[in-house]
Length: 464
Image: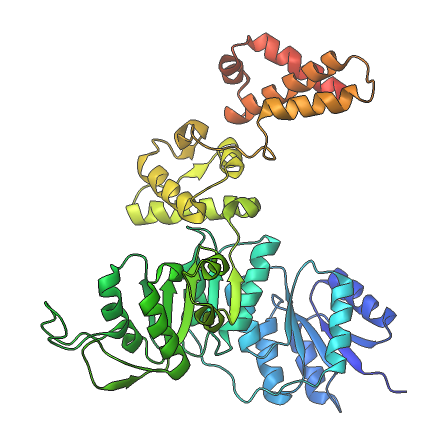
């Protein structure tokens, strides 16, 4: 029986080997290539294309997206899985826009890759009739953590589909950035992106802002006003804080979503528009529906695809890259010298729970770029005495008590001495981190002599 052939294209020999081996172990015939040019030449010469092709994005010469573009011109039905260790909106959306079947973020689970191959070989591919045009650069969205990589893949997928999207997330997480990214990676990218915060407009003016009004429609309406729906015709309308929309306007919005047409306030001309709606909220809309404050049928119209943006405290590993990027851009905009965070300052930033999320971090970086006196920003420059430090939901005394109870239950010997030793080690290390490793300054902050700090450090390291 003829086995369908799978191709793996990756300049990393180790990735190529383990993926090809896993696919062969699953019963597939596999052919390997170290770069896109070699794979492309083989594809042109092959009597028939492979059943599935895996390709890395970043390779010497033509990258994986260029290879994908060529493949889709020659074999539009060939399913291509794009792989990359650099997952961002541009690469994921570019892959899906180019016709990729799936996007795998490295490192990926080999079982997932093998399962994906099984699904592809069991599912007819969908032909791509055309390649989407180039679109403007995506707004800055940064994240290397798994939750953000998953979000980027979702953005890349949903951008290509003409579906309404509901974005959920706490205040300051970047909901408008995500909406803008969806627009810029969509076929509507060349048309307007119009944003309206429904909570920021007085209820009596919101209807006019959305649908426009005719001259004389109400007191003060001296001339015709074109509303946001008309402004966004052919493009995307982003409605932020949709949960605050008054009930009468919810009814009008539902009608527009259902029929694609409306009247301006005070008007008789029926206006037809082609607008994609992206809505956002920090509120639990299901609860608002249960309370009678939000229409269930409107929620169903908006919630075709839901994207949840994680709060910053759930993606702490992204904080260094975000903070450095914000600080660099702020320094450039303010025309001041470049500044960097010390290691201790960065650790302090990562310990914060960031109730204001990414917006709070960005505002802090702008303040530091303008106000910090030195190029190196230390803990004292942060002025974050009010920070809520994340300690697994407990204060340190509660955590210590819990640890002590657990140790006493095991009849451990010399518990006090062991606790004191661990306490000293933690305090010393924290003081050294806060003073960039300067023992004298650490001793001063702790109220100890330098010799005492040196002796305790020596004792701590011997115990390790």
